[in-house]
Image (cartoon, rainbow, N blue to C red; front, side, top):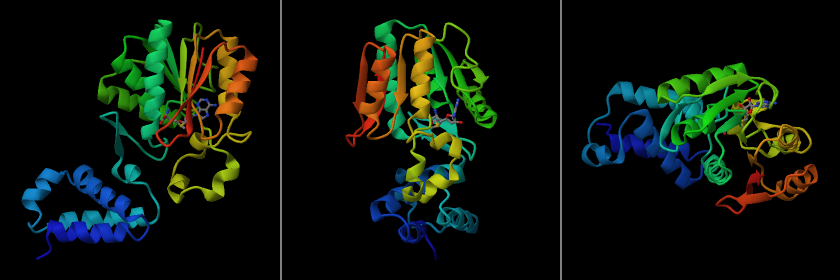
Length: 274
Ligand SMILES: C[S@@+](CC[C@H](N)C(=O)[O-])C[C@H]1O[C@@H](n2cnc3c(N)ncnc32)[C@H](O)[C@@H]1O
């Protein structure tokens, strides 16, 4: 008899062929919880139950895709971010936990500046704009240059009951005045780093990851446009090691206060300018 416990063990071993042991174990638990709806508590009571053929085949099919490098969030079709479920797919970046630091900084600076509206530029799945719409009383607009990504964000907003506007176009181009607080996780990966990146990233849209000028181009252009349009402030996710150069560029544009926040690994992660 092949039990759930056997299945978990063999899944951990299969994932362990290309992931470190702790990650393989954590991911196996995710497959059971998110994929099969079998949480740890269920497992304690039913670990020795036989696995139906349908679930064995399902795990086998997922494994075939995962072994080729496809991220779990794409296989599953959704991911949890700040406790909410967001549809994810090949047209959007997979939401990352560190982007919550952008949200926290935006909530703080928005309160401090008394903002009444904000724009999420490059919304992807919509995590920032939708969460701001759900957690504040600000008027929110979300934009993306990719109409396919915007369609995903719109479906997520509908599913989560968030009320916000959507516009397609390049950076602040489609946003009417007054623009409000600019919140964004723009593409900031240096194209020169491409050969060293995890294979999972090759499944994500290039336009969501890479930016010219060592990854800095979109952050700089967004800061420039926000300044010209007299936005009250900018909260941007940035790459590790990009903080000091971006701070200098922002100050040279006339932003009075520019701060760099670090993530839990100690890397530059969020730029706040106002
Ligand atoms: C790093 S992803 C971030 C997605 C989402 N905000 C998040 O945090 O998960 C960057 C997003 O910016 C969009 N984008 C890229 N260039 C853009 C541009 N020039 N103007 C507007 N959006 C752009 C991409 O299509 C992508 O959805």
